[in-house]
Image (cartoon, rainbow, N blue to C red):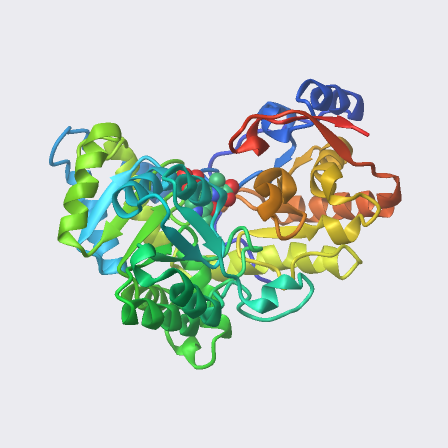
Amino acid sequence: MKTIIEPFRIKSVEPLRRTTPAEREKYLKDAGYNLFELHSSDILIDLLTDSGTSAMSTAQWAAMMRGDESYAGSESFFRLKKVAEELTGFRHVIPTHQGRAAERILFTVMCREGDVVPSNTHFDTTRANIEFRGSRAVDLPSPEAADTQSRHRFKGNMDVDALEKLIEREGAAKIPLVMLTVTDNSGGGQPVSLENIRAVHKVASRHNIPFYLDACRFAENAYFIHQQEPGLDRLTPKQIAQAMFSYADGCTFSAKKDAFANIGGLLCTNDDRLAQQERNLLILTEGFPTYGGLAGRDLEAIAVGLEEVLDPDYLEYRIASTRYLGRHIADHGVPIVEPPGGHAIYIDAGRMLPHIPRHEFPAQALAVELYRHAGVRGVEIGSVMFGEHARHELLRLAIPRRVYTQSHIDYLVEAILEVAENKEKLRGLRIVSQPEFLRHFTARFEPL
Ligand code: F0G
């Protein structure tokens, strides 16, 4: 059989609420045209994020019942530690309440004012945590990533020459760590090749700089490597994931992505001294090192999820479903970041709406219109989110794991193509109020 099906059946459902265009217009106005301010019950299909929005499996729910809620020495922690150690090879597995908590602890311990932290592309919380420490976050994407339309296989790769030059210019002493985000979320959900991971590891280790993976979507990245990197289809996604981690000195991880959990994160390392400092900070703000801000039942859900996500049937369906959405809109003229990424499709709103200049936020305008037209929520990844650091004006449609079915995806295709038919009529937005930091969460807009 050629049809790729959802490799699960549905045991528990949540109703979706339909709204009228007039209702949505009112909700938009009340929200200051910022979709983070909407109530989720007013959204039909929510593609704001794939983070914490997965459907858990029966095995995960069952495991949660045996959550050991002991303050210290929880059995649930040791179960998670075993799974994480086997997967990543890291000796120290420190649980945190989510990915950014792991980032804050890592950068607090490793970075000083004036330091520089390179990555292929830092995610917004990663960048913000580095900058909050007084260090500088530097993106070194591969040259292929500059053109959203080019169809290279591993557009998430880091530009290794640029990394060498940065180290030469800044001096290794000013670079406390090098990071790679897999998959490259802010760069279009694009994968990083094992060859690039190895090359970055080589450069970093030659200069004695620790190398970390931001491993939020490690399984999707591993599947792309399995599918597309010459000679690597003979390895299972799990073997590839293990190989990816084997080149790193540590990782940050948000269990809200490739562990199908609704909350949770991990900070891992092989460095004993660093781990001790990290645990000290953990106790200060997250909790004791055998729960790190999570309930025992959350630790159980993550432990099961980390194994389920590497199921080749699941990953085949996951990547195929995202590609289906991408191909069906791109082949009908809607420019997306090519090729389709792992967890999301990114519409290149800058290219789609050339009549709306950057400072009038074309991707935000498109996000607003898609909600107004069809009740679908996406998220702007462009000048609203990244300000002057934005490389493109993108509307990300992130697909929650195991949540929506093929007919939902078909509805999305229809909605996006209808919006695209009237794209000349779309107008930009003006910011009327914004906070200093992470402004995309609370900025308010006015239509022009
Ligand atoms: N790193 C990457 C690559 C991410 O995508 C995220 C979160 C984080 C770190 C932080 O993890 O949310 O658990 O604190 N990304 C979500 C998103 C929010 O919508 O892409 P967290």
